[in-house]
Image 1 (cartoon, rainbow, N blue to C red):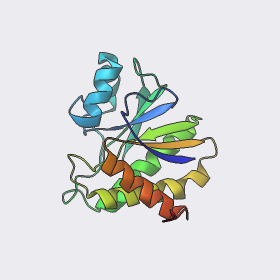
Image 2 (image 1 turned 180 degrees about the horizontal axis):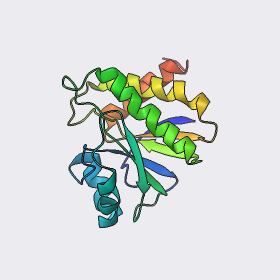
Image 3 (image 1 turned 30 degrees about the vertical axis):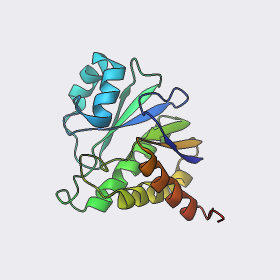
Image 4 (image 1 turned 60 degrees about the horizontal axis):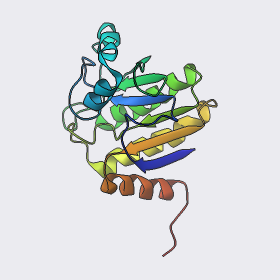
Length: 174
């Protein structure tokens, strides 16, 4: 049900909704937001404008346009050391995105590592909040069959996978 892969969030054709690590104005930018907006085309920007601004922890949904998905769920993660309480706001991102996907009847959702890039959230802490929140929220989301964490590099993927294995009780054998 929960998986961690290294890859490109803009190329997840078997997933119904991808999550954008959005800025408050939901505009194209760098990182995940830039990649998703480039892949989706200018219609995504037009669809986002009436929904902005959003606050840290909030999630809103649009169509996916030229992306191979049905929807994009946009979340504004907290800036570490600025937005408080950071852990609660980051957990709200994941919880709100999952609940939005559930309300839409979606079966699959893919997340990046929200706030762990330009927003400065320490990787281990960001992974723990993401995975603990997903595990705690999924029982309230019976439609969702797959939660995928799509991570940019091998280090981030290994961190998420190691923590997921620990949380699910799948300790690797040495």
